[in-house]
Image (cartoon, rainbow, N blue to C red; front, side, top):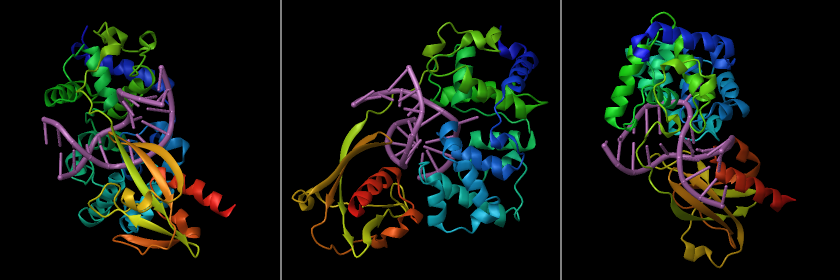
Length: 336
DNA sequence: TAGTCGTGGCG
DNA sequence: TCGCCAAGACT
């Protein structure tokens, strides 16, 4: 039996299951569109556990409880609030959205799906999420959870990240979204993907919509395009400390992690005879980076985008996680 | 369209 | 240890 043959029964089964098992995430305890938007941006490509356990959502919404408060905040401050979450472009766009709300919408959050979709950093998914969660507006949404569920219940073997696949998923989502309780329905769908219809080992015996699922091979769905292979690269950086200050480099606006500070890079031939202080690895997109840190033997002069910073003030600077970890270790060694 | 953007969890 | 992937959007 297809879900599209009995949309109301399908919706009700999901909603009933959800109301029985729902988690009380903080963004489910509000209908403030701004707070819901913040949660949606944070959760893009980021697990709930990461956002909650490290206090990102609570800290950020306490600091920026309204679009107005974020709109006027300095860049380094918002990057610091986002430090550790990654995809730093998200918080830059969130600030642009806040500014657009202040300037174009006179400070009040837009209420229509079309207007929400116009805001910077907000695509189809996030517009649907904000409209349905904040306003209980009957808008469809497709995220990784929904894509996985629909691919399975319709036994869909096309690649879901192709334009054809995406179109099909959004068609099903629009067809099936609850007209009466879209807030609970959309939440339920995503929660089901997170708790039951999981990527690795779906728990089909516990699934409230099992009767509408037509696949025999859920673990093989959804199908996706092949991933780019991981490329190994090396990064060689200098640790220069002088008079209680440290030399740092700030990524410019066109660069990866723009606005963030890290240790300055130098060509290997200038570093290879210096003492090696640290060797570590980290992943970024499809790269695996081996990071080497060398001890400077003399006081270097700052190059483009480089500056000396008081070591006691490092906490207030936005620094990407791999460098934050290395700095914590090295500076602790240096002063203990 | 395909490439790019961070980080951490998990099998 | 390694690869996959997660409440995507932009260029």
